[in-house]
Image (cartoon, rainbow, N blue to C red; front, side):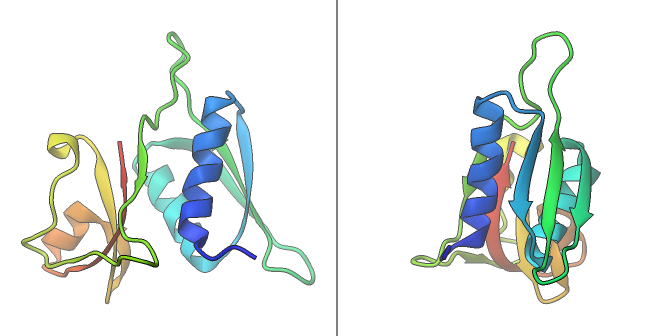
Length: 133
């Protein structure tokens, strides 16, 4: 049993990129599905598919994105910010920019999971889940 599903999600992506895999399979949950959608919208992954199974919640298949010339992954850094042992919350004015605005922070707010820029625009704060660059 996994105690921190977000860390598991980020670690599976990080490990797949270090091994130069094109596709990574991750056990699905609603939180992971939303994280995957945000990664796709921001251009960090090329494709994703949610596969449901009869008795489980299913699997997320993510096609990782690499640069055509340099073969470097689109995601350079994945950092878990808030974790079960130390939750990190920030108000809308306290959310810090990631790498001078080049990266994104994913925030769990009362209005759902969104990026740091969306949270600032909607003037909501919440738990800072992770930083992606």
